[in-house]
Amino acid sequence: MNIPFVDLKAQYAGLKGEIDAGIQRVLEHGRFILGPEVEEFETALAEHVGVAHVVSCANGTDSLTLALIAENIGPGDAVFVPSFTFTATAETVLLLGATPVFVDVDAEHFLIDCDDLEHRIAAVRKAGKLTPRAIIPVDLFGLPADYARLTNIAAAHDLFLLADAAQSLGAAANGRAVGGLAPATATSFFPAKPLGCYGDGGALLTDDAERAAVWRSLRGHGTGKAKYDVVRVGLNSRLDTLQAAILLTKLKVFAKEIEARDRLAKTYGAALEGLVKTPSLPDGMRSAWAQYTIQTNDRDRLKSRLGEKGVPTAVYYPLPMHLQTAYRALGGGEGSLPVTERLCGKVLSLPMHPYMDDAVAERILEAVLASV
Ligand SMILES: *Cc1c(COP(=O)(O)O)cnc(C)c1O
Image (cartoon, rainbow, N blue to C red):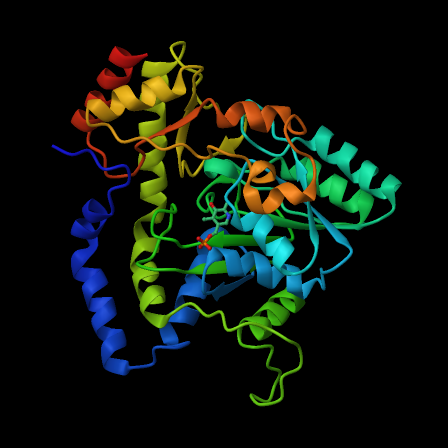
């Protein structure tokens, strides 16, 4: 028996009737671009999360890009991002000609370190070469960053706060769902994300109507009221109607799936605590558990032993952004982000999805116990 790392087939088996019918409806009405399901899904997600506006787009990377374009971020601007993240967070900054300034994370929760952030904002101001413009905290592995403190830092320095919630849709902080924790939130519907479609997809969330209107214009080439009078330079970045139809069905079971992920995380935690460093939840936080990531000094050996026992694992991320080939030129270099660099050698993510049955979880845990 092969244990899947993420089991999309099990999810489809449970939803097949409704997903197939949704796809069939789109094939029949034929409005493949911005068909009725797109707006329906945007409204349903806004309601689910408790935000006023959802603007869907082609993928999570574009959602970050669109939000930065809307703030006119470009050459000469500094955008503060963690280095312990997926490529997209920093890539989008560079593509707009702005400069990502990498910030360290905390070793406990893998989230942007607010003390280090303040130091780096001060350093950029002192150097006088770049204008601090935005912070993009990443809710890594599904856990929201410290938005209470980040909001204060952003306000104190007049910075745009954009949540990279590609991994954390479904999570919450003190009762407020991800999507409403920052003035702007970007997310992804990549298939393996907590809420995934069957291809690429993404969205931006906000309570600000003006901001949402600009995003909506930008995702459709920057059109204004008249289709062929473009009022700002935008992108072609729309969520396919087919993907929206699939997401509408998946959204109905999403809350239950997050609960199932949370149960699995608790099962893992109870069995592994003390043996390896298990992820912990700060008070008042709910994680979407995009990944269940442990830390151990013997990571590579544990990974290969688990592989031999048929348990797939993944390393997110083996190399921090600031040490990757395309980003080294930004400076920093080895030793500049010590916690991030250390974590890259210690992290290991175990299979995590809402459809794992107890027997499989048991097998995974036995394999880990026998391998550490
Ligand atoms: C997946 C991911 C993205 C990008 O999403 P895509 O839909 O793949 O473009 C951005 N940031 C983080 C942290 C991610 O995990």
